[in-house]
Amino acid sequence: MSEKNDKILAVDDSNFEAEVLKSELPVLVDFWAPWCGPCRAVAPIVHEMATEYDGRLKVVKIDVDQAQNVAMKYRIMSIPTLAVFKNGDVAGLIIGAQPKKRIAQMVDKAL
Image (cartoon, rainbow, N blue to C red):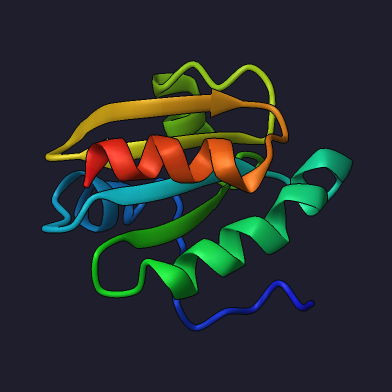
């Protein structure tokens, strides 16, 4: 599976506010880095969720090496970290690679 998915938007410090905090839809944010093995393990799950929740959930990926201001603001200490933002606030947070069921439960709570 490639890193490219037209349902997943790459976000960085410059567009985080517009794409995540001001989003009409809840947003699943995947904080990751290319060198992170567990991040690569969770990537297919994030891609599946982008497809399954299309129209109800926005899915974005943030490379913490490229978006250090956002990573610091939200105190991202380990990756992968998956967060659901709703109305500009963190509505759920999972740290580390987790099964799809656990991620879906967090997302469903925010919808």
